[in-house]
Amino acid sequence: MDKNYKEIGFFAGNTIEDAVNELMGYREKGELVCGDFNGVMLYSDTVTMDSAYKGITGKTKAEFDKQQQEWQEDYDRRKKEHRENIPEQSKVWMEKARGIIAEDKLDFWDEIVPIRLSDLYQGMELGACLEIVEILNNNGTFEEAKVAIDNQGHSGMSFGLVCAMIKEFSERGSEFVEFVR
Image 1 (cartoon, rainbow, N blue to C red):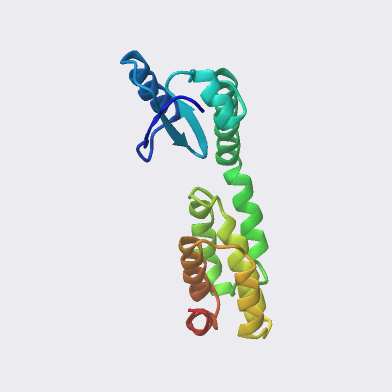
Image 2 (tube, rainbow, N blue to C red; image 1 turned 30 degrees about the horizontal axis):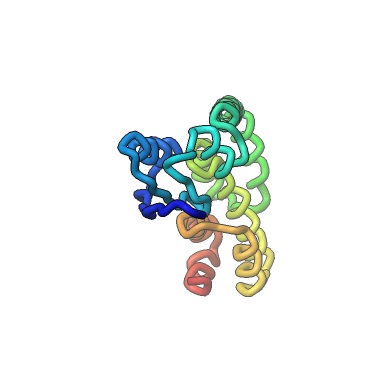
């Protein structure tokens, strides 16, 4: 490259648009600068919004925006469908607990099911809890239950939630949770 570019850094959290606008500001002042945005070097004298988007995302800005809009609409649709299915799903999860959760705990289980279905994890923790409680209630070893909970792919927060539920719904739950922590 025969031009001398001064390299600049972009702030963490900058969007592609922010970076392009910053570079265009340098262009207007006649300054040759470049900056790395997610591994793609952008130059003040040649950058356009579409060239930056193409280089970084493989799509023009319009294509990228359309894809983002479609993703958001799909997400909103799935979220709405999930909310609408909570009464039906509640019945399913209440029924699944029969024969796994002790009779004296079923009223509490039935009370929390719609709450769990409405939260961040959309009920994932219900199945995770039942899987471990079933292992523990059928005289499975703590090692077997630990393998199962490890294979469930929890974040720290979902792991804590599932452990709290296991403590509540299995006679061996408190001892198991001590074992896995």
